[in-house]
Length: 298
Ligand SMILES: C[S@@+](CC[C@H](N)C(=O)[O-])C[C@H]1O[C@@H](n2cnc3c(N)ncnc32)[C@H](O)[C@@H]1O
Image 1 (tube, helix red, strand yellow):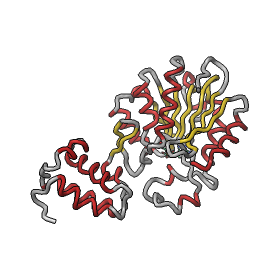
Image 2: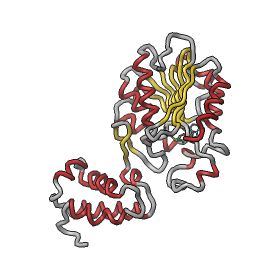
Image 3: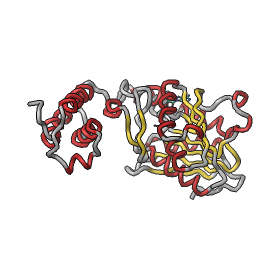
Image 4: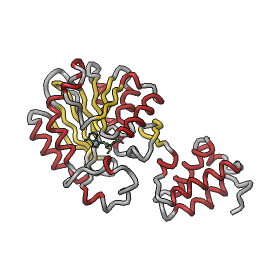
């Protein structure tokens, strides 16, 4: 391929072919990559296919393609990814935010909007911070605690909070699920809402998946049956949840019945429901406890 005077159309055509073996969406990936490198929206590039790329732009595209061919996921190559209409920094220390998780954020947002007196959130296993930050961006008086075992992930989450100007309303804490009560501020010892997208892939399944080794195992590995962390969180959740509070848990498609059963074991008075994602797979368990005046999970 000649490297000078390459137009957007020519580059999209010739380089998309290089991604067909490594991506299910090669054309889209190539457009996203060109948008990143040129700093122009994807739609603008498609409307201006005659635009000539500069030499540095071409060099950057080629370098990115080499990384993709080495198996590095596109969001890590770009260094950022979109979630819930917002841009998030991502690194190999953070899970790449998934569109499935937008269902949890949508439901949590709806719950918070319906309960203006309930403004405390825990985001357990925050990763890039995408759940807590998206909610804080939409609910200006929300305050949140966002936890993770991974310090490098928390550093990325904190940068994202600064970027989205919500850093004063989110405490980032390194701890196992939730902090020991005695170590945490006495005034902030209950949450109206607990959201968690915890690792939920069974260890043996994870080892067979293409993402194994490409995204952090700490973010994916849910133990023998995939439910180690969800089970532990549900055990400690009652001591953290305010009366009338709610818990939204993202789950793996095959875990609906098992997580419902775990939820009923702990919250036998609660209203609990299972929700499907856009593909029709079980994806979210919603637990609405009684008490207070916050029964708003319709
Ligand atoms: C599936 S990722 C979700 C990340 C982010 N919330 C999202 O939806 O993109 C799970 C996150 O939980 C964190 N994690 C794993 N074990 C944990 C634990 N015991 N306590 C707190 N966080 C944990 C991982 O480091 C990872 O960032």
